[in-house]
View 1 (cartoon, one colour):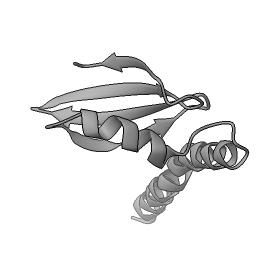
View 2: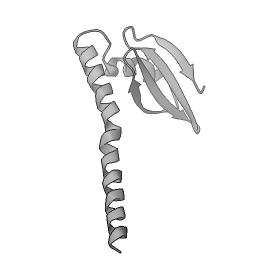
View 3: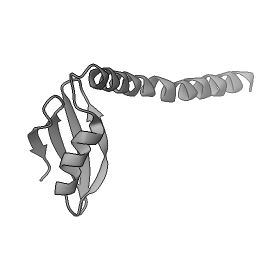
View 4: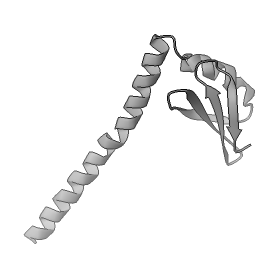
Length: 99
């Protein structure tokens, strides 16, 4: 019984630690985007969204990803996931997927 309690406690501890670890890449992504915008190397996300989202009529905007030199905007329309890749420096659309 005691061994089962220890295993359960360990499993809960590992599970509880995962969300914090999973959020670390997102924090780094946000930090890079903020720093790049502040330094004038990339466009603000809101400016990118203002250019792209209105052209995606009928699609739900699910959110962005940032990888250092591009934003990847995720949309859903009629059960299909669609991605629009945008150059973070120029705001130019550089790719689409799922259309």
